Image (cartoon, rainbow, N blue to C red; front, side):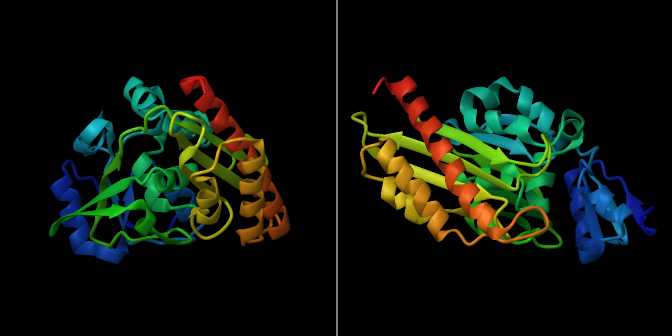
Length: 294
C-alpha cells in the first residue's frame, strides 16, 4: 500500500523543526529513521497531514560524556553509531549489550534512539532499559526545555508524555554503577523480532555478597515496560545466592499480570518472565563475582 497524501518539510536546524511542530501540532509526525513510522503510514494506520524530516538536523546526532560519568545522546543518533561507540561500551555496558538485539543490522543503520523511545513499543528493548537505568529525556519546544524521567515518560501503548509541539532532543543516562552485575534476556519468535517477553536486570552489592540495589524491568508484557518492585525489595539487603534469585523469579511470575495477544498467552508470558528473570539475575550475579571476586 501507499501512504495517504501529506505535506513534507525538511528543516536543517532544531529551531526550524520546532517552529514547524509548533505550527502543525497534532497534524505532524517527525521522521527520523522511519523504521516504525513508514510501515504504519504505508498501511494507513496513521495518516499525518505533515511530515517533518529531521535527518538533516545534525545538531541532534551525537554521543557525548554526560554529567558525573554518564552519557548524553542526541535523539537522532543511530542505533548503529551507539553500537560501535567506544564511549557507550565504556560508560554503559548494559546499553552496549542491548543494542545488537534491536531488529537487524539494516534497521539499526537507520533507526534512531529517539525514534525508538518516542514510538514506545512496549516490546522494544530501549524503553525498558531507560526505565531500568533511570534515564532522563530532554524535550524541546519553542517554549523551552523540560526534562522527564523515564518512569514518567511511558504512559500506555505507544503513548508518551511528549506534547505535540515537543521533540526529544537528548537522552541522558546516569553514571554506570561501580562494578555492578547486569544482564538482558529476551524471547522472540525469530532473531530480530520484537520480544514476546524480555527482562533487564541490574545488581550491586556491598562487598560481602549482600545486595545493595536490585532493579528488574520487563518488556513485552503489557502497555509499557514495568519495574517489578516486589522482587527488587526481596533482593535488597539479602545475601545473593541461588535460593534468593529463584525466589525473586517466583515473585515476578506471581505478581505480573501480562497481556495476551496473537503471539503468546498471558500464562505463557508469566512463566517465561519468571524463567528469564532467573537467568538475568544469575548472569548478573556471575558478573558481580567476576568484577568483585566475591
